[in-house]
Length: 76
Image (cartoon, rainbow, N blue to C red; front, side, top):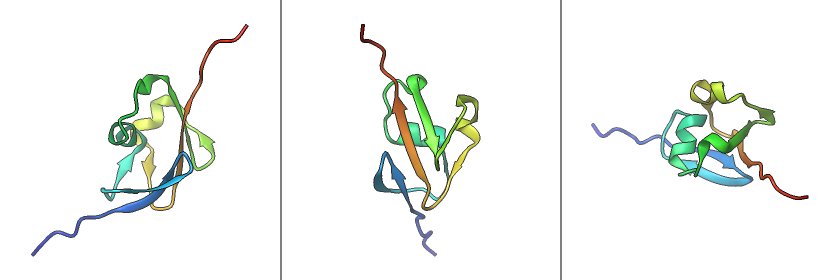
């Protein structure tokens, strides 16, 4: 019997994407999306800002919306 590969649709930074797994955390998404300097990224999950300590235990589900936010310094 073949195992059916699970997929889910979520929105990342406003774009609908299909994730080739049935269960992922925010930390998993940072790796899957090859996010550069993940230690410098803030994450909003379904409209709520997440604490960095919760990235590894916050599950992402079908239809969720995730925003990776980069804060840049600079200016005068």
